[in-house]
Image (cartoon, rainbow, N blue to C red; front, side, top):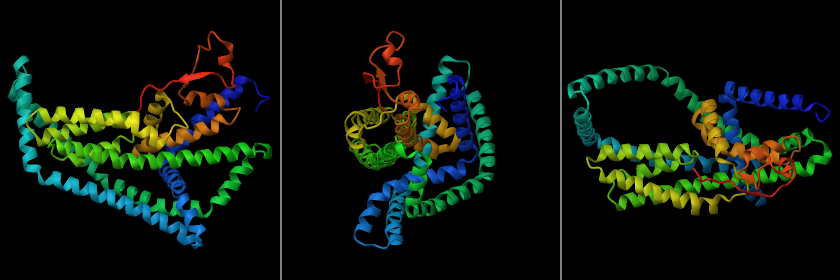
Length: 374
């Protein structure tokens, strides 16, 4: 590829990028379970190695970690279901509070517009009917969606088992893909990618736990209803970089509004979320996850948006570890080193327009380009 003209090489790169995105978009139902299973398998490798060290049979050393994962997931689902059940039990009070909020909003709107309360009620009724029709159409495809979820969850443990069982074959395939003189770099990239994936996923599990306890517990101290539900929803959504925190704030406010007729609890929820998120972004998460690979905010947001468009929620959650692994690979290949620079957050110390050294592929003096987390 080095003999080709620069324009041809860049064209091949862009065509390859478009082809990869197209394949992901078309076959996301097949690819995403494999990628998720691969990341979970990397996370379970230390447990597998520990069991093998004590002479456990290979099949048992693989099955036991998978069972631990599903017990953990079952516990999360049970906890979330219990909180939803409490919310459902308060539905009569929620309905009454929502009616009061709507009435206050209608009176506020009619106070400075010609849109009377009767017109507003008619408008809400019409839109409610439209929403019910849309819900009916969505429900017609619910069986297909639910079956897809069960297939997704059913395939993941099988993929995890097979990836751990055939890991040596997969590694040999990767090494055979490259020339012998490049094998040290491949080995280094494999170890670093494994470390990044483990640190990232373990960090996210720890983050969900302490965010739920810290946020939910603080809100409970302030007497906010459904505090634990707000905590767990925000903790899970906070895993989606930048976008998740905004959605979590909105849902926290909506849940608080349905359980109270006053504005004070809403302000309390927003302030507590802001304080907890500040500690999470600047003190807790950097120490837990570490900062071996830094991705800039622009690429992070684009990755989340593209991942969500291609593969929905799973694509949004997996976008960051995928980008991090790609950066590790790009940083170690001369052909794609510029893509590693694009993904990173280390800005050149001076403008490449003025200093030729900052236009080269070699190491240059940089400064942090981080503008904030999530």
